[in-house]
Length: 552
Image 1 (spheres, rainbow, N blue to C red):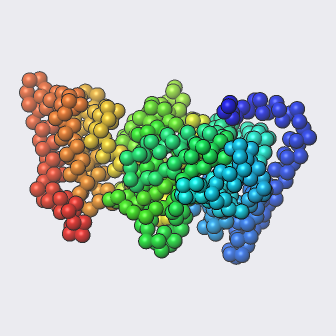
Image 2: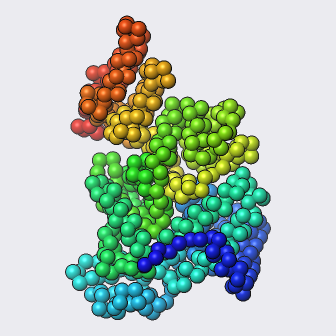
Image 3: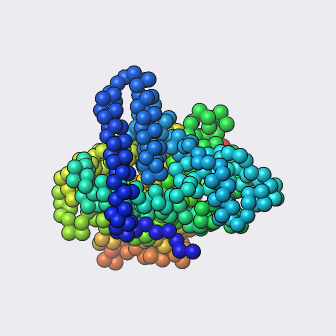
């Protein structure tokens, strides 16, 4: 069976030859959006809660009536409490899995057509209505012959036609509006819309989603904090997907989580670290981690709460080069090396290869350095996005299309975290995670990156950068008294004396012995750093903390 494919040129020609389809739909979209804009302009500044509730319902109703493509935009907004009023968010979250269901009879007919048998012959028990309805399908909780419960997702009817029609119109409107938008995206906006279209067409191919779920499950197979539902291949097809049922609490309301005796902070930490693993280790990530797609489960593994991912229609990969450059960019931010950050932006395509970095480096230092402040905890992506919007007018920044889903995933992840904890800062978890991996040198890539960080071009040891990495790990807000430095130090020592640590040993020796003489200054600085970081008192406090978290 040929996979579904998004093809903007083909679809544009298809719609141009059918003006009786395109023109009425275009008028409908423009009329609906005009009405929404006028409502916001006239009543958006009102302090009356009832007015704001009515506006939120107008927004919800408009997006719902416009269909799947626009609902997806609303879903993205529903994860951003720092962009959207709190009283609007309560309405927008309904776009995740509380949309009007399509007729039950159509769902039953779709299952029979796709799986080759009536529902009664396939399931021991099948309900009369879905438990959730989303933009592209609706979900039933059914029971199979071996008595366990499963989630059966059935696709909405006529989706291929709807998506082809609306993506042509959205792309056309986006390209026409790009020069007037308050962001210097230029022609890149069309590419970003194409990326969105490609992900939508992949999302409505449930065979593709089943493969995604299996691949994702394999990546977290050894991680007890992350659960992925199993796919039932015998009860799945292109428009029907059956998986094991996940019994959990949606990551939506902190009070509801606390009522279930679940720790929102531990759950956020798991979500963020698993997201970092996807981007920086696996190179394969869930691009739609909104509260409807993440469930809190009972149990805890150390500092991590237990979460389950569902809905694997919107997934994407990041190339090894981009993954390593992204890791390096986080490290360069740790070290406040803004010249290297500018080169990272250049390598990832946010800046042209021939762009003059001289004026850009101080601008980046102003934006990123000011946002970092004295602590990584003060950093948040909303502040960075706002400042970059200003920079894009004066400097040749643009958003590469391949980063559209990555940015969406990171922004959605931070939005989910902020919803559960308004004081949360995603970078405060990202910094220690990257620093620990670097210092442990657990892969060849990390070992090479570590060498680049702690040695300069002449081969001299940059003790201040090593100290910066150790400080980030020691000051991790989830660990007291530097307790997490002990396993990191152990991993670092194992690396130093292992076969994989040959390059590190050689570089250290070359640093400490120059011109056939011992380099006393570097040796003294390194010894001082070791004493400060791993002195007897520090080690004792760390060991005590690990044995009894309440004692230190």
